Length: 138
Image (cartoon, rainbow, N blue to C red; front, side, top):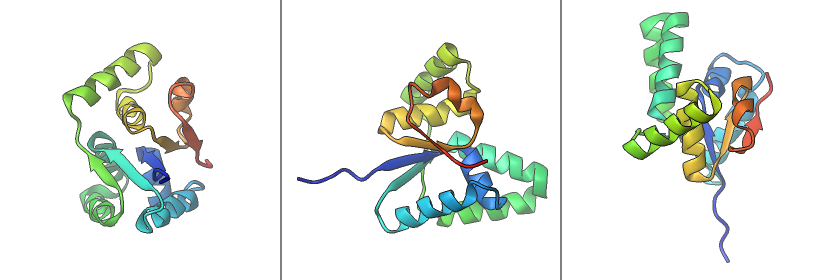
């Protein structure tokens, strides 16, 4: 009998916590190490990648954002493009729970993959019963 590899999806909060050396950063680093070893799988939507980039532009300028993008490309995180099915799943979550639209994409991806969403963003409390969440320290 084989056991499925656990999967986690990361929202922008998780990567920003790592890059900013915030309280949740060590747990995100641990998840990345486990992904490097093949013990878990990590994913994030391209929409949430965009969130990391625009927030980094605001804080560090274009050069800082380009450095963040280069760093993300080296991490063991599958960046998932948004297809029609994922967009509609995100729209259903938005309509039902009023979560921010970008956040709906990561929640919809967690549902699609049967994955745990790693975040410290308290807005996700709205979908706690719909998506499994690992709360990062804040």
